[in-house]
Amino acid sequence: MTPSTPDHIRYTSEPDAAEPAVFGTTKPCVRTGRLVLDPLVRDIEAENARLRAAGPLVAVELPGGIPAWAVTRDAEARHLLTDPRLVKDVNVWALWQRGQISPEWPLIGVVDHGRSMFTVDGVDHRRLRSPVAQAFATRQVEGMRERIGELTRELLDALPNDGQPVDLKAAFACRLPMRVISEVMGVDLVDQPRLSVLFDKFLSTQTPPEEVASNQAELTAMMRSLAAARRASPIGDLTSLLAVAHGGGDMFTDEEIVSTLQLLIGSGYLTTVSLIVNAVANLCTHPDQLALVRRGVVGWDAVVEETLRYSAPNSNFLIRFATEDVPVGEIVIRSGEALIVSYGAIGRDERQHGRTAEDFDVTRAPNRHMSFGHGPHFCVGATLARMEGHMALSMLYERFPDLTLAVPAEELRHNPTVTQNELCELPVLLGP
Image (cartoon, rainbow, N blue to C red; front, side, top):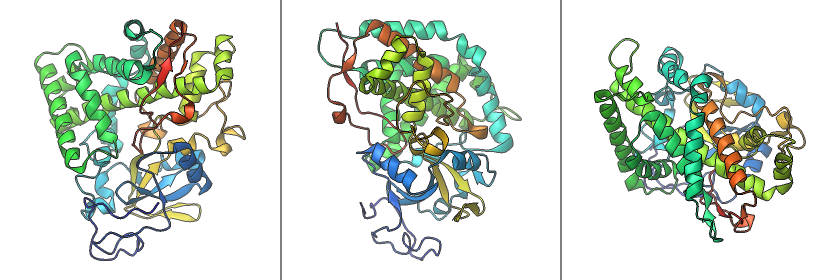
């Protein structure tokens, strides 16, 4: 696939010696020598296999014709995610410096959603992460168990079990994570459906260019409104904590609060939706593995971990920029270039997981995946996501042990987002 340049991507008129095949004209041009990530995500497993086969560091093309490097293997990813020469600051990105990334680029929000622990390193990262990490510490998350159980039962009770197919994603898997993260953050119930829509559009490669900026503006406005409401009337949620921790010194600025709220709500929602949906899809297509859980050979935690490895919720994420040349074997990430971590490819790296890396195996031990990242930016909400996944799956299958897919597995389609491994829907029959 060799698409021409969309109108909303700008290129300089002067050639760039580092990227002669990509730059050098303001006219549409054909790219060569790069693996093009399919913006429609028509065959995610085949694409991940091609990434792995191409080597540990692969030249890729993101939607909109944007060049980047992708790390596709576990050992190299762990090394690069702790390399101080690769940073979060988008201003290091040469394309960004030269004004070649349009505000209408579909992935603009991933790299430019404001100042938060996701976009900074070092001292500022520790300052912004510390209060959030405390709120998501194991003891704090354990205190949510009873409430998560109540929310799960409420949603399961509402599922229509009339013998007709049910979209389990829309009816259950989307609603539970949004309810949970909203209670953690203090989001009103009435605002949750709109937030789901905005975050889905936030990562889609098919959001019309003219809607990208307006979608982000609405998200920002909702986050500002939430912060203002909780600053005026704190209710003990995490937003209230952050809004009160406002001012100078070690406190959060207004921009940092707004960006942190968007980061936490978006990641707490999107990643956990994919975890639940992918786990159910995997169990439906691997009944022998579900039988092991039912016989007590392994617990639901094992299903969660194997799903995180086998069907990583984040497929490719643009998260690092080189401050200087970084050699990776015989390849060099040049200063100013971008790096994405291809978690989908990494999860089935045979060098890490052996010759059965392509198998969904809930008995896999050890299961040392890196789907929550690695290093200083390891996902702060990993404990909560794991608990939600465990409780959602165990209670779902306790209530509906005969759950099956309502369509052939090959008919399941992925959402058009190169950053998420997310099905459009999950039609199931709940059983008698």
